[in-house]
Image 1: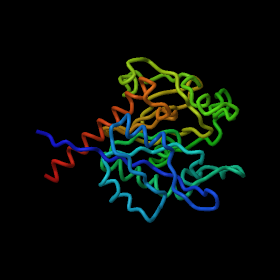
Image 2: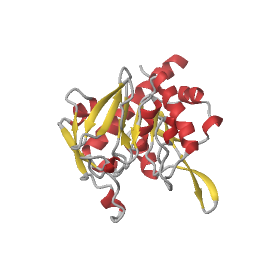
Image 3: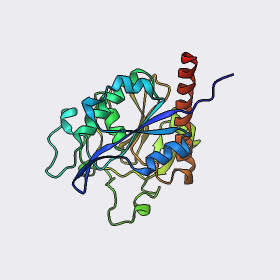
Length: 257
């Protein structure tokens, strides 16, 4: 009989200053998505960069959820041009997530990378980013509508995505595509080696990827964690992530037994 274990899923934090004090922060929606939809125990991972041993941490995790953020990956990580003045960056987060993603992939730790997370996944594996997708010819404006209330910004009707015919996401959705709440300025430019496209926006922008030869390693540009239990595909995606984390937890428990 297989042991009953509760998977431990790391959830990445951002470094922020609030009221003059430094904090490590992560949105409640990500924590709740892991707990309520993936059926796992969320563990907040502080943005401590070199103070964290990514290999040691990855060994302890059953899953890794790489969260979204208002900040952009610093372009020196992918050989990009310097960011425009006023662009929000988070070097402590970059220094934490990029090596942690690589370490997790080496150990086949299940990964779900959301919004900034898909960008970090692409950069961690050697890809590049567009810093302002909306300024490219023929592209949609994927940015968040700041004139809307939160519920309006994250409504799952921003634009459709089309799934790759042989992809994991099409199988989970049981459909050729879905409408998503894709809210971003940056986006994938050159796809990293080892990544396979899972979904495209109508303008051709890559909206989802998977890592080849891994049990579960998916990046998506939209936000399934928002009101996750109210949307069938979001629930299915987080449940699949949770099942992969559960499988790793059971395998690790058997090794320890």
